[in-house]
Length: 485
Ligand SMILES: Cc1cc2nc3c(=O)[nH]c(=O)nc-3n(C[C@H](O)[C@H](O)[C@H](O)COP(=O)(O)OP(=O)(O)OC[C@H]3O[C@@H](n4cnc5c(N)ncnc54)[C@H](O)[C@@H]3O)c2cc1C
Image (cartoon, rainbow, N blue to C red; front, side, top):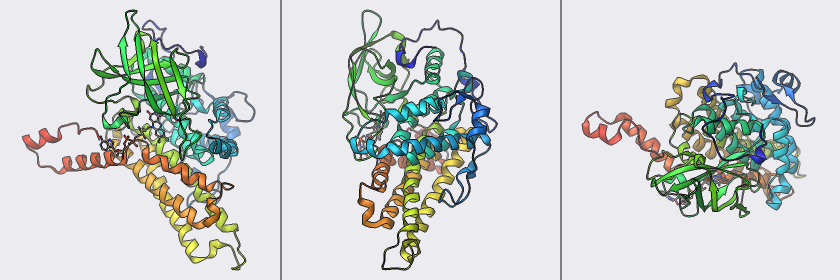
């Protein structure tokens, strides 16, 4: 198998028979992590293990009380495969947590964490088992991502885009089958992929702006791509970029696969943000980048909307459930803050009182409110993720609830982290403690899709369409497919 670092972008129509077909994946509760050629490795030994052995070694009891939340960590787990993902993510989270403060302070990308996750097989978590991956559905992705984010939000958010891209490609992709197969194989071998769609001129692509990045056909039958992308998360480590561009001859937006080594492509390290500082969300510059004709993998998008893969995610649709990687990451960050503040309150004993501050009534109230904030957020996230996997027939109904989940989780996460800061008091401002990082890391979630205003407008349209009296005018106004949020 080709190394992901040498991946070519050309996706030949005459590619060999598929190793796996997108429809092969299993997402039910019986799905075995590491089934087939997939493997999970403990993060410390680097040796491949079969899924079964990894499960047996990785599972350890997670008891109520350890988590500091009202329910045990594994409360929503369906089977040992789920618990194995949770346990592995926990080990990885602990390792990443040890480096999180340094990367946050320096604004550096945590390459070591990516290598750690790659060696453990975590980067292939959502690659179908038949392609050599972990075969995880949405629930296991969410389970792992929330746990990983407790250790390092930046690492979790970054790899979340990759797990999401792979998962939804495997489930239902408008791309040519050969392109999907190729990307899945590269991901199974450790490759990393993410969408580069945001631009300075368009802002969030979900708002419908057309990319100023352009793709023109050359005389040699290739595409020439020019433009600048912003917020390209994990840019320092990606092996493949999914670049949206206006295809001039079509007057439409298309998505192109661009390999890291393509001449004319460079990453400008512009990411110096308040939070998620280790996510490597830099600018991507495409200066006369030439890619083969078949690098255009998604040419059939709506003519007037700049929707690439990230744009598609806010439309709902057949892969909407994979968007839950975003609330999972931010919920994990909030959870880390709550766990920290709770432990702090239980042990902080100022000499003005007899016991710990956890026994002071107003602190106790705040500790209780943090739990109250997070519990329903967890319930909604995990319930939707499980339903997505277990009930394909219900997926058509879940687009709006999935969008709502992100809003609910963000409100809860922001509120919980704010309460955590109040519990800890002035010490929480210190860079010697991780709390101020959690406080900063949770903020960027507001600016990840779906955007709140767009989602709320979508809910409103959906709700109004449900109650609007039937009739030619109303039916025409709402239509069978509500407009994109
Ligand atoms: C941590 C992080 C990681 C990210 N990773 C990626 C990535 O990997 N790939 C990628 O492509 N992008 C990524 N993004 C970018 C993200 O998807 C958005 O494009 C970006 O945050 C800008 O969106 P915005 O709505 O905040 O800004 P803008 O779209 O610039 O909007 C700015 C303000 O104007 C308002 N506004 C603008 N246009 C409209 C409109 N038409 N209607 C109503 N209101 C409008 C908005 O509500 C907002 O208040 C990432 C962002 C963050 C924060």
